[in-house]
Length: 147
Image (tube, rainbow, N blue to C red; front, top):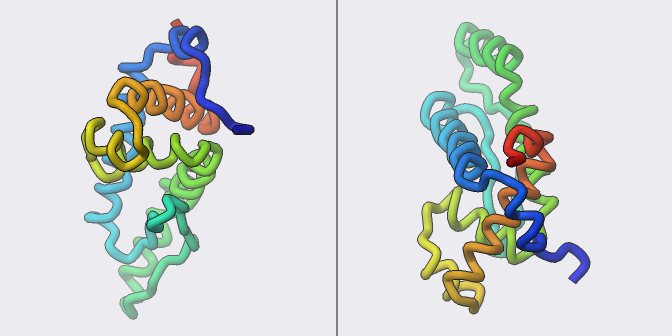
């Protein structure tokens, strides 16, 4: 496997609980954006755990609302934020993607994830830790979590 999970020694160099909390915040932000800005296109996850994202904002016909949404997306760089998350997830290997997306995007538990990929709960946790570190490294946020 060319993009294998990280070694335990490397994983221990990071504060995983804080990293996991940071990823939860990111996915909570995405869910909040889904509720708050219904006209913003958000990424979708395929059955193969590939992420599809078009950076498309649907128009609803209201010029005032379009102006406000465009201003908000400019101010908060929503499209850029979403694209950054998508490209960071794409850095993970297939097992890491499955574990990462099932846990953070779908709120699935370790035992169920283990059944999906055919491994024990302990291995799911190792894969998830590796995925979180790789994800935040791709986002450029790993250094603040070094122990």
